[in-house]
Figure 1 (cartoon, rainbow, N blue to C red):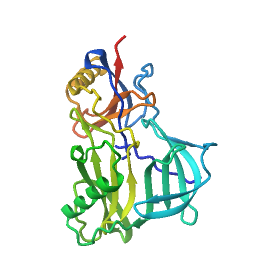
Figure 2 (figure 1 turned 180 degrees about the horizontal axis):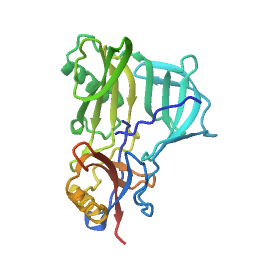
Figure 3 (figure 1 turned 90 degrees about the vertical axis):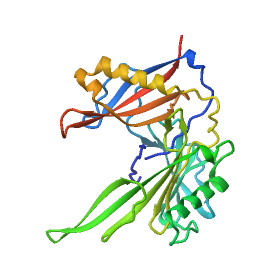
Length: 311
């Protein structure tokens, strides 16, 4: 079974859904998950702790062979395995093309709902090579609206984040070397450079992003290498109640109560903040903090704030 890289977002695709209790009936409880160095659980007794890594298993009920299609491309597929991601509220059945293992489809377990498509050969989206940045984004948004957005998702409420994976090829002591940087924005590669672009469309709730909702990975020639989608059919947000101020207050309280270095509780910076749906179907917010313990000493801590009904 081939090894795969799990990209969690702050790389992967996440959606939230369902009705939530009124704000007055919800409490916000924050617990730390791990640091970027030791991966140690900081609050082992907290019931908000999530699994840190994904894993694969064989789904005995999965269809072993099936046809797959994505944006006009069709493939005959074989079942490989089923994957479980941390945070995600669902499992994905993984299929590869019978004749080309570089083409992969991932469906919601035991369903026809496609949440991930990958083609290392590059899928032609019909976007001209000389398209401007604005024309590229417009074409992607038209593809989303016309072919990929399920009913109930308002394209006007999505906001776009763009990143560039920049690969630089140099010779160090006559040894060919490649370095990579993940940069914010759409950046044109220079000499001895190659770029892949990540165009991500996110649905914000009360000022907090959801985990990556729709994501396109593109080459410089505007061919598609990967597409990630949310959990289809669950993007009904009209009744979702997330109070950004309550989340922030819970995070601040956790830092104040639990940091050994009390000064650190006032020095952290929020790097990212996402709403997601847990395995039990309830909402939570992931907050990544950057702690500065010196000029060059930085530590990342992930906090999970669960939204729980008051007893």
